[in-house]
Length: 287
Image 1 (tube, rainbow, N blue to C red):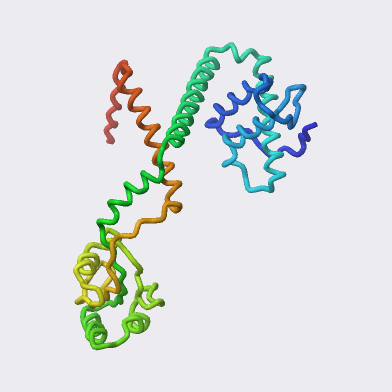
Image 2 (spheres, rainbow, N blue to C red):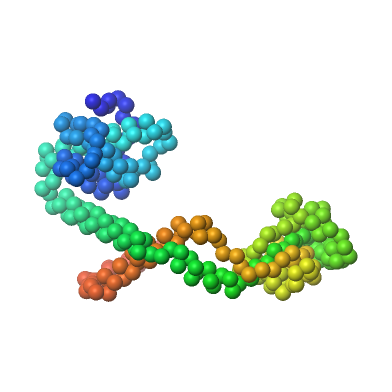
């Protein structure tokens, strides 16, 4: 039995109607191919575990935070609402109306489209050599350089010149950064870590990448103020590890396969646009 008093899921916005219509059509269909457990019955109509999964995909993000038990109860309640409302609609012969038939035809096309896109992505991923894609992509990264630098950020050029003089005279750069830099991240001695040229503002990057390892550059001004820069190290750009970007490579493979499919079908199809959009009305004169 479904406890109607426990219902917490109200009817959802129109953008979820499509999913609801599809699930309603699925209830009561043969389930021989599915090892589904029956989770509820509504006037004899069985609701299966796979129905809850479909509903969760469609509306899960719209449900409020709740315990797993409360969330499941909300899904069962929504499934029951679909069955009840679908049966009430059938009793009124709404399934025979042109509007319903058109929406169901559109829904069928949408589901077929999604099924094909999912299959295309899955097939492409199964055939892809992710390691090879990673190796080919990271080859180009090794041609770039990255620099590790420390910096001190101050408000005036005179202060920056004074700090350059102290640092070149043997003062500890990290200590100077801690005592003088207005950069909030200077508690660690102004260490910026490794960065590539495109990760810094142009004025800073130009100076950093033309300064030799171990050297302290002349002050440089950016939109943030005046910088004193010390180059700690220069090395070829280090690519991220394969495992760190594996999921991104998978997404690239899937999206590329789907995009290629759509472009191929478009090129092979004859797409005609009938009629022209009506011109927008001219704004009325204000008197």
